[in-house]
Length: 119
Image (tube, rainbow, N blue to C red; front, side):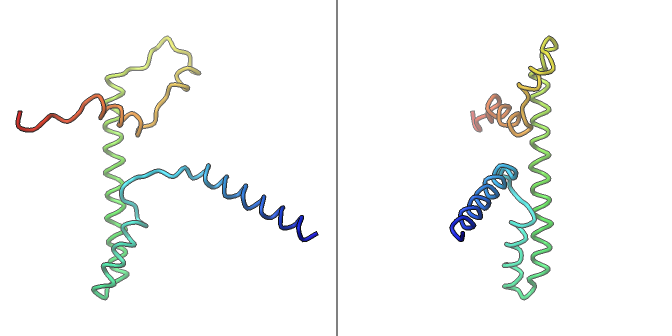
């Protein structure tokens, strides 16, 4: 009986971990309250002001992430201007060919490399 319960519990735990991995979809973005807040807390701890450092780090992280996402949206808009949607496609085809702002920004960067300085 204990073996069945252990097996069922392990299957439930495995399913939960897999579902959590699929649902969260980890993305690498700069900034964030947790990342910068932790660094701010450590820095603030060195100066005996851990909470103030954490709050300041959190605010800086939120601002950094906001600026990053703003840049992505701007580049995605530029990509959309250069690559208009074909009006003859069905709604299903447009849905299948859609791209995220991050994908559009990456493609725009690839099509427009920075100019070489000094030439």
